[in-house]
Length: 314
Image 1 (cartoon, helix red, strand yellow):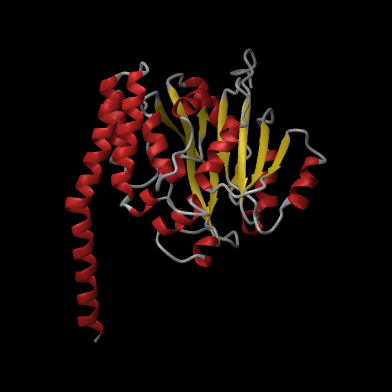
Image 2 (cartoon, rainbow, N blue to C red):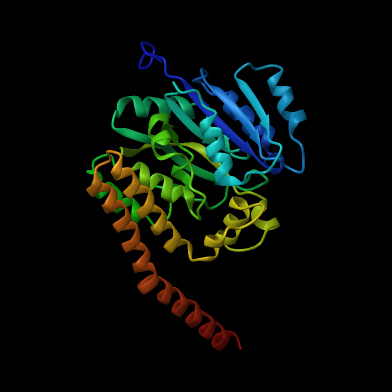
């Protein structure tokens, strides 16, 4: 690892676990501990799961000094917990990543991401190609995200990511420059928080990709246990106790208002105004395009599909 030997970075990984990764916690922890780049701290945070994972985690704690463990006394929910573990990292952290309690990581996942960030000084996120497995370990149809914006200026970075229809869910599991994450203050308590977080990070740098499959994402059993749309699942995960009033308004509207507020406030404290304004403008534009074109098209297509199905199969 000569590319980092002169200035060894501090690497902090945070695994938030709920319900012991639906049976996959031990396997996921082991895939992190088996990384070829082994100089890191792994914090495992349990958000007061009904099933206490302490016995599993204590087995690892007894044999590996890189681990830390926190079982919270109350449930925070997905976004607040993500920000909590971010703030647990030491101030001199160089690289940070949220890691999953049910996924699998290739042994070179961390090494390759750190190398990519070291080679691309302007990049703030590095992530690899992903593949998918189901709860039994069988390969499924999950497709990798193909996206990077390191050759773009700040306006094109914001525009291209705001128009990215899918893929943020793969990018958010990459490795980040810790300093940039702290600048934006962690996860917002909003629907699609990964999209908003990465979009705001585009103000400070680029996203780069490793052209290797290094992350195997597992479909959670939660999807079958808790029915409903992506929005309803996120609402339960983000607000586990009580939903605030704003969560009953369409999330695209709330997200646009949130961006307008935080970026305008950031501009008062030295951030360049025009890129901040452009970030809010692009998200609002994409949201309006969805309401005016995307939503009616989806409703028409769904209605037409039902009509044709009834006509064909009646």
